[in-house]
Image (cartoon, rainbow over all chains, first blue to last red; front, side):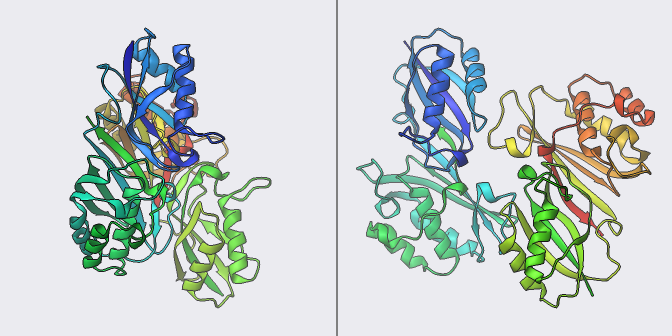
Length: 245
Length: 245
């Protein structure tokens, strides 16, 4: 029995998220279909590093699966890329130790969130960014982000529907960069709760618009009360960049 | 009578190019529909800086139209952006002198062409880049590009179907930059012939793959024979960046 790790890139726009569910096209379903064809036997993935939501993209999502197939790594990759829909590609295939688990072995994950910050919408950015018309104060957002980094219970920034019981995570860093009329957020943590990045971005944008004071960001975090945080930023701006093991 | 200049951004993927034609959705048609609604009178555009092909994008395409309407600039912009499909946005609206003509007044145009140069396709780049699997020799492509810059008859790099009779253009510069696994080409000229950028990119890629020698690039240019040049690079990699007046 082999344990094989796949690194996947996908455009999430036309999928109902990663995780398989009835009556919806998901990335897991597309992947398992392609895997079963390539290995010539019904194959299910063991785990993904995390379940990206409907519309969320990935540059390097990681999944693993167990198989008795003896097909070569290179052939598996070529076969998968031939069978997968054009919105999904396998960037890397590796044999890994049998105890490797895409989710439990992950040390940290990095997400990017992109905002198009201009009064006029941008057709060329629309599928990958949240359009925020009002000017955002970058300095205030950076200050607010400092309250969030570190080890905290992030319950205030998660949504019901997540599977996590323990809500404490270590948010290693938040970078916020202006690139022309875009604002790029980079989040690195040992793990993220359901909707956590999108809720943090929604709340940081409230600070950037001057609708929320810095002290309120601090209070929201420590309230552990979801109702206090800002809106959930839309999925299209979010990309899982990579997972560290 | 006013002469009004519009700067447009669009994602060309779902349009049959800029220019109006029967039985196809074009950017010109979408724009004239929105204009006629906003100005409350049937309005046609006088000209565009050039006609982008099916699938070609624009960051700052320029068009102008004449109107008797007294509506304010800001209201015209807001109205257009409300009526236009989401793949098109008006980034700027300006009153210009009556003799301004988007095409004839243009001094130079700048296009970008993006190549995703990796054995594996990239779902996140697919709609904006040409996927070239074979490694490309950047140094050779840069050397070949030097033959193309300057004032030449570019007949060898145009396709039948263009309206131009005079085929001499001044290609002011070609920049070729590696950005990770992408290669970005920037072309600036006083004007471009039909398919000229895409044919130059197709031919430069032949040089980059080692299929065409430098001396052959020189001969192709001076042959003025279209059959000698390389393939036409696909439309999705091409974006009209801006027009200088």
